[in-house]
Each structure stands twice: as C-alpha cells, then as structure tokens.
Image (cartoon, rainbow, N blue to C red):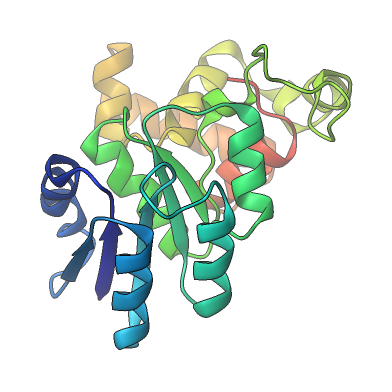
Length: 220
C-alpha cells in the first residue's frame, strides 16, 4: 500500500509513520510539506492507497486543495488531518470529497482504527463534531431540530446509557481492549455490549454501526 502524508510539520509526519505502518505489512510512505509538493508527488506515480493532508498547510487555500486532490484521485480515499476542528469544517470537508476528518489529538491506535474504517469504504467523522458548539448551525440537516427526532425515535433510542457510552468510544476508533480499559470493564463484557448494540441498531458490523450512528445524528 502506498500512502502519502502531507503536513508542514516534520514531527507530525514522523510521528504518524509507526501507526501507518500498522495498516499494511508492505506499506510504502511518501511525505510532503506543502500542498503543491503533495500534488506533484501524487501525480508522479499511481497506485495510491491513501492520502492524508493537513487542512492548514501551505498551498491548501482552505478546501481548494482538498477538491483538487480528490478530483485528481477519484478512487483514492483522501483524509483531512487537523489540529482543531468544528462541525462546519468537518461537514464541508466531507461534502467536498474527503473520506474522513481525523483530529491530530486522538490517540495513535484510534487513528489507525479510523483509517481502517476509511480503507473499508466508510467515512470517518469524529463524534465530537456532532456535539453542540457555537459553530453549530441549527438550520443544517444535522442541526439540533433534525437530530433530536432521530435521537428520540431512531435506532439510537434503543440503546442503554452504557451502550451509548461504548458506541461513543467505538466512533472515536477505540479498540475493544481500549474501551474496556477506559470504562473499567472486562474485554468480554465490551464484546457482549457490542453484540447488543449491533442487534438493536440492526448493524452487521462495527463499521455499519458507526455509519448508522452518524447518519442518525449521533451527538456523543
């Protein structure tokens, strides 16, 4: 698998390498420090499996760089990396073609799980992006008025408080072992809760449960 990391901070690029190497035993990682350099590298060869780009690096021009990269590599998942975010940025990135929006603040293992979700064909959106913030737009399709009905009457309403808590960690990309540690549970207990979550949400697997939660206005 060929992966391109584009970020103007060398420490970020170097810090991501060990985690990206977990995605495939034969991963090949290329680096770029600006959008122009990333675009040039991406055009120089084909066979890309994943492209990661910092939203604020030189040359991005807000979301223009994302659109250009997505148009040039229609079959390659392009994921935005960001040190901070709000609901508007996350939704605009996805609307403009991003396969995911990954905060740099999440743990390395959570990032790996988020990227695996993207590589499986799903989109990754951090659950925090659906929490009420000053930037939230109540007129948007996932604003408070739209989400409240889904939260009260949709598949999320069938979950217990503990199941919702576990689902939140699932959306953030945590593994069963990490969820068990964070909540002080046995890993087998987490697995039992997950089976119940899948059943109640009518989800076939982890990725589908995340997608259903986000589509139904998950607020974390």
